Length: 379
Image 1 (cartoon, helix red, strand yellow):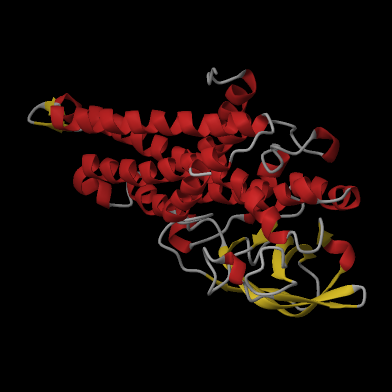
Image 2 (cartoon, helix red, strand yellow; image 1 turned 60 degrees about the horizontal axis):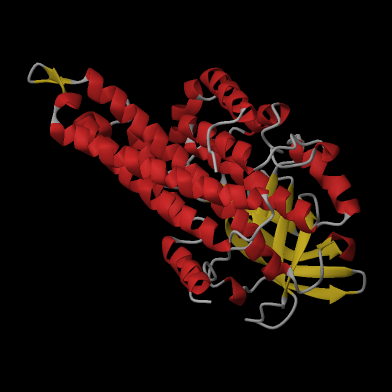
């Protein structure tokens, strides 16, 4: 396998850098300080084709594969991890779920609008009392003629307030039954469906995280994704790809922190020498660079399998586990190299440090990744 950047990846990377210099970098501190979700930015990302990277051309998407997708996430994340997170969640979760399991009518109705970001997507699995234990969800969907009536709440949902359409998994069977949950496509203007409290977060503050609330929300049976009862099984398949997204997000943070640390170490003088000349600093950078390269190889291995349509459960979990832990480690060391300046908001590593931690939690904690990997290797 060769993981040299192809021409599409080079084009995407250059496009994002040019775009980001004008549209992201000047505003990221404001977005972070005010926890502002810049919805208008994502409309512009839609115009660039970045909100439908994996969507085939026939549905209005860019028609790229996972290599290009990883590059897009990494480059956006180096500019602002919160923007990379929102872009990834829109692509891999909401849009990806409809692309993978929707019927032709559903795809034609929703995918072109999601790919252009006319519609911003959300995806609802997690609940207040069922994080990793999704099988015990309490949000119910009760059949009533040609409709299902949903009651309950989801939390920690990206675009929970601003999303125009959400894919939501609700219980249609018994608690704990993996075949007792069903996926629904729900438009924002559906009566009984609304966004709830927005979370006040440590990091990823430019990405909106909020509740989804359902109060006697009537959803027509035409909005069921796939077969009734398959929602949980579908979600596990969606998360296989989603873990590649979070691994790429982690890689972007680690690369951004490493690049900042290298540059600073060359410029910062102590004892009449750049601190990069000291072994204590160069060894840190060597460890950081090695971890980043190892993360990259795991991610591109998973992306390659995904492009080939092969099972990626183990490989995506490994990539997500390792890359997310590396992002925390590398960001931590970057702050250390910056010293006191790394603890201030005047330099980018402080933000990378705060943003990195989410990668070890979102879309399955590191501990859950180990469970997934363990089950796969012990089959």
